[in-house]
Length: 130
Image (cartoon, rainbow, N blue to C red; front, top):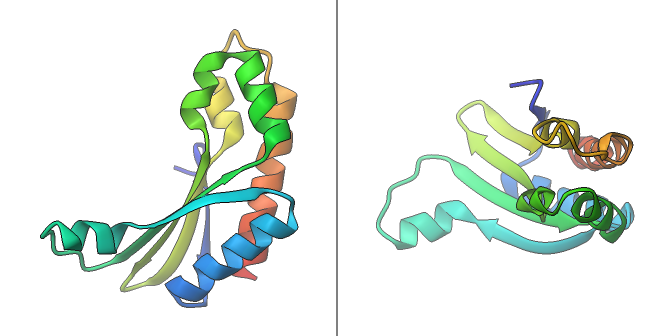
């Protein structure tokens, strides 16, 4: 999974990690488009969940524009979802690597922008779990 996702552990609670992630994204000039408490949504539908799961969707216009101009199918990865999951072992933050997504479209020239986007998002995750 390390080739496709960047994963870090947090010593904070799920709620505090989500708040730190939202702040880190905004500090890095990304926009937080939505935050979804998936555990609450599924439990509302009658499904019993034993772990917390929140998805924070972020977007940065510079990277999003470069992706879509390089290949409109790259928009399938927009906005960028960051998963915050809590289980018996604690809290984990994970995000799909932009370079992995770009690699799914080998004929697309998005490698340099993907690396830049990935570096920015991993820095956001690192700041949130610090």
